[in-house]
Length: 508
Image (cartoon, rainbow, N blue to C red; front, side, top):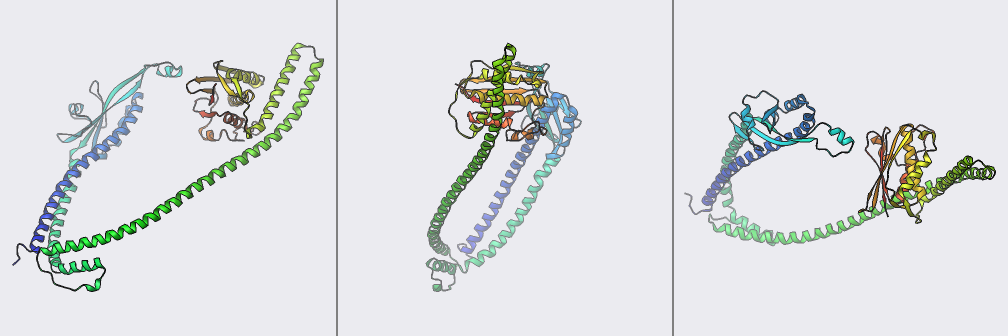
């Protein structure tokens, strides 16, 4: 006969009750969590589908392409238990588009938003959103940069009709299966616990002595003894276990401190290695850039020397002809030739300056720089059919070298002229930001534009898409280096048609 105060009886009873109530708690918790997760997951999926459909509706609906929307709705049927999808215009409660035929439209029009609601043999889920519908003259307002109120914002709703049968099948089938499995596991655990308690109660004292011996480190002192079926042994086992845990904790603390020391040292060495690698990489990049600039400077100096020789001859002959010429028109043209020769000499002299720092900058009138650049390029035959539209405030002052800044605009103009093949329009616009002390300059043309795959290489030296003999690929690179030398910024913007260059420079 089993005593009611014995460890076997108490432990078996408590184990059975614990397993039973734990199983009940787990089952109800699982049902609750499973239902909550199911509805949350269902709502989340519908929300994601709605967000995807909203973007398509916002694109197709203003174009009155309802068939595309309907086909899109049909593609989502049977996904996430969806039976039908309906688009509703909220202001007049009108059904615009439906993937399938609707038997009771009134049920859909008045269903709640952002919540899955049971209705007869199906569920409803509705979400609302707004669409901006462009009206008449909207495109003209954009083209001529006029303020526009030709966009009407309308409110629409998406209603999802869900299959009750599929939802209940997905919801309760795993729950019922889990309940059956939980009951089977509970019975198995109860049987196992009975045998386990019977196995544990007899050698309990022996286990206690073994634990004490292990805590002292003297396994040889262990003497096998039989255990009595009394609750007191649990206390002895607990005391012995606590001693063992304390000893293990002390050892663990020592080992942890030692490991942390190794980790800290390793992290320190790792950080030092990262800094060294970063420094090495920066030095390597700087060395490569220096070698490139040095090589380019050497080439530029040679080119400048070769150009200056014939320029001196041209200038000398101009001086001789000017001394003999009396015709004022010819004298005027000869002086223009001399001015152009002097400007070329300044350009060749500046080629060697790109690789070294210069501080002799001065105040420059931006409008004068642009006007002189236009005046220079107008001597070319290719410019005759090119129109210039200049919108630059004559009061904008910047810090820089006039000749180099003039060269920037000349190169950009010539690049645009070549792209437009001699016919088109070049616009120069400057926006002065006094707060930032910056001027934003935009040079636009009506050419074919720059392909996106070429934009990241457009400022690289010797990069060109022109035929051999038509370009060297240095024009835009020179522009880039001049702007960088002036502590500015240049980039290519999207502009269809044509190309737009944005230049940012400091103002006075």
